[in-house]
Length: 171
Length: 146
Image (tube, rainbow over all chains, first blue to last red):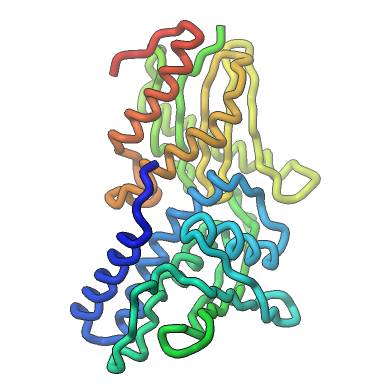
């Protein structure tokens, strides 16, 4: 497959966000749209991830998170994240990104301080995991564009079922 | 003589999304194809239940005296079926890597493709035929003219 220059990718993403801001005029709505777009991307991108990384089924959510951080981010964004802050039952963790190629040239103006610029990534993770029967919640809690020291995404597993066809009758 | 006969793709709901013959084969009626595809999908699901260990992939290979059926069930639920001459080498590997990658690149990345809908992609057709055609020619079997 053809590769594109990373800067073109960054700029394209930026102009898309800019257009959404112009179209929706409401920051919350833009955040929602970015998440939705990411979700649709994630649903398709998961197959490429599986095909090219040749990974097998993950045994637990910890492994899933590690793979997203180390293999997934590497493959699609050429960066890696670290996984920390696990809760006691292993259903919630943070993905820390120190380098986020989406935001390379970006400064957030004051009136848009509520904009979650990289919210697309959350949607991608949600969409991708949905395709392998995991319901997750994902959102940015720290954003360098808003003055934090890192990008932090909080990832929470709501439910997972390995169940597939044929479904049990008593469901 | 080894040869690749045809590729079928079955969606998450058991519907036939794509089928393509690589050699001149006796035609199967479209409705029959739909029925066969969804029956195979069901059989793979049932076979997985027989597994004493959880998370079985279902049927991977079915061998008959006249053909092999390589079946690859992705973690996202899509099933790829490759019909080949018995004992055609490397077919499983081809299905799991190259064909799956072509599907990702040319079907899923096409913004006009809708999830779980019939695959209509010239680029996918073209690249798939080129790939399988080259393999078939290496074994000295001709490619059907589309």
